[in-house]
Amino acid sequence: MVVLVSGSGTLLQALMDASADPAYGVQVVAVGADRHGVEGLRRAEQAGIPTFVHRVPDYRTREEWDHALTAAVTAYRPRLVVSAGFLKLVGPAFLAAFGGRYLNSHNALLPSFPGMHGPRDALAYGVKVTGATLFVVDEGVDTGAIVAQCTVPVLAEDTVDELTERIKAAERPQLVEYVGRMARDGFTVTGRKVTIP
Image (cartoon, rainbow, N blue to C red; front, top):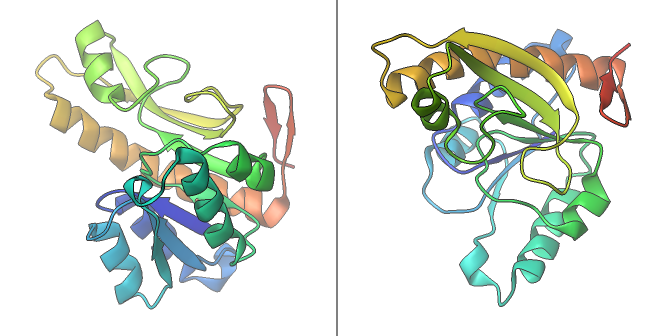
């Protein structure tokens, strides 16, 4: 798989740790980012995993960026692509190449609280539980078919940072488990349903 990151790479680290065991059945073949100097890239480089960076501002149009990102990922011929905190929406070229096998982990219980501020929005709304959602990316914003969800209680004294960290703690094992199962056992997407044998 190719993993795309934008920040610290804690989800990436969980996937790399899991893939160190041959029984996991998945190998991280490359890590891509939309900015230089992020911790996620350093984690990959320290593990000897190839990296690449495609920044949106380096291209004349978003479409050119999408084509460049697609070409970079295609070069590694992944069976799966995982957005692990990648903060950019891909475009039609990327989805044409990887649609149905591009996964994203979101830090809220979709369809509630899509977008970049899931924990903040959940806290502001006053929900009593939130969590993480693994889904197959489509052309919408956090609208794809749901693979798995896990719940995290919202505590009365929670700050956004505290809630975010508790969600990440639940999100990492969910991501590792389901990416491994999907890679080893295969999966189908039929409408809004994702089935893993």
